[in-house]
Amino acid sequence: MASAPFVEDITPQLVMYQSMSDQAHEGLAQARLELAAMGDAEAIAALDGVIAQRSQFEEQAGAYVGSVTSLDSATLSQLARELMPKLWPGVLTMIGQMEQLATDQQAKLAAERAAADEAADTTLMLLIALSVLASLAGVASLAALSLSVLRPLASLQAAVRAVTSGHLAAKVAVSGPQEVASLAWDFNDMVTARSQAEEALREARDKLERRVEERTAALEAANEELQRLSTTDGLTGLANHRLLLDSLSREVERGMESQRPLAVLMLDINGFKLFNDTYGHALGDEALRLVAGVLQKLTKDSGIPGRYGGDEFLVILPGVDKAAAGAYAERLSAAVGEIEFQAGDGARVPIRLSLGLASFPEDTKSSDHLLAVADAAMYEAKRVGGAGQQASRVVVVRGTPFDGAFGTLDSLVQAVQYRDQYTKTHSDLVAEYAAKLALRAGLSEEAVRAIRIAGVLHDVGKLIVPDDILKKPGPLTAEEYEIIKRHPLVGEMLIRETPFLEDVIQAVGCHHENYDGSGYPRGLRGDRIPLLGRVMAVADAYSAMSLDRPYRKALSVDEIVAELKAGAGTRFDPQLAGIFVEMLQAERHARAA
Image (cartoon, rainbow, N blue to C red; front, top):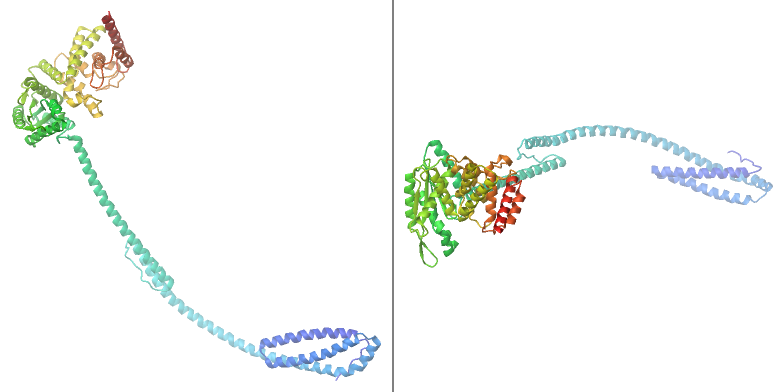
């Protein structure tokens, strides 16, 4: 055993001892934590015994240090010499125990480390084996997964191609992993939704096509009805004025191409105005329908019956010569003569007709002229029969119309004058003032003679205008005005076959041309309008303004003069209008004197 050291001054040793004690305490605490982590209960128990002895020794040493720290150095040295031999064996024993414990722990740790290394090697081998097994299992699982995924995906791809090609019934078998199966469900739902949408679209398209077909059929029916209404008289159901004129022009052209005869029959109800005034328009309409019914029954498919206007009817008989047409007219007169109209008061009123007949090509080769001749013949029948006519009367044109061209003109003038008293008065006034203007303007005697004849004939073309338009008490509709605008051309055609009347024809055809080109029928302007036509335009306007009309009173001379001055250069030749105004003012001064 080592001898106890002798220390003269123990203060440094005490300080060193305290430091070593602290380090030993920390080392023992750390060792115990490591043993606890290793779970070595036996080693922990042995270490706890060492710690207990150390704690006891430290208590003793602490008491010793506490008692000696207040002593002087000499006393401390003396105590050290006395106590050190006594304490030193205990210290050595404790140190030995700690060294043995450390040796045992190192051996144990070495054994444990070897065991741990062996376990680690075993674990490593196990991990390698497990890794190999896991890899093999992964490969197998991957193969199985590939089969469970790729097959459904291939099926899905095939279905997509089928749907893209238009096979909307294609579906995918639901199989494979959840994600793939969910994709298949979604695809099938999408295909089903698209199929349903396609079906809905197909049904909507079919429905739309049916509606379009229905609407188209309805539209075609409506167009047909409109076409029928536009060419049918609403009261009688016969052809209207427009269709009659179109049909007559077409049949005349066919007759000229095929040399086939054609006859027209113009007729009206005698005393129809008085009938309307006496029994009312409702019964008057019924009388018109009765006559229309007879026309339809007799004509059937052999001709075209129609309502020409008012109480006037026209029958076009293609392929029928004058003799056959005359026989038809007699049958019509007899059939209408058998009708006795039952009036509201119980009176039985007979219906009587006046009929005029003309034929193509015997009487004329013009459709307008044909109408005018038939109309003139009808009014001749009225004149011959008189107001008290007891039976229907037919007038047939025979040979050259009314035995010569001038006879025809005279008959046409008489027909116009008989039909409309205003037209007679107006024509006479136009003839008078046109001749006066021609003389005042210094025209030749031949021109004055021609303008006088033109004044009488200038409205002969109105024979083709229905009475309800010609005598209408109010403003004309656009369609009615178009009919009126045809009368200068018709009048021109009616007198064209008369010899030595070239100047008359120009005056009749141009009396509604305006100086600025806004007139009708040709829209001529300025000096392009024949001189006699310009003279007639001023005289025609004066006559129209100076006579009473159903819709206005006659204008005063001052008002007429103002209108003529306002129209100079637009409606009228300004030079002729000026001469006419001077003439009117001279006449007024002469009357005032």
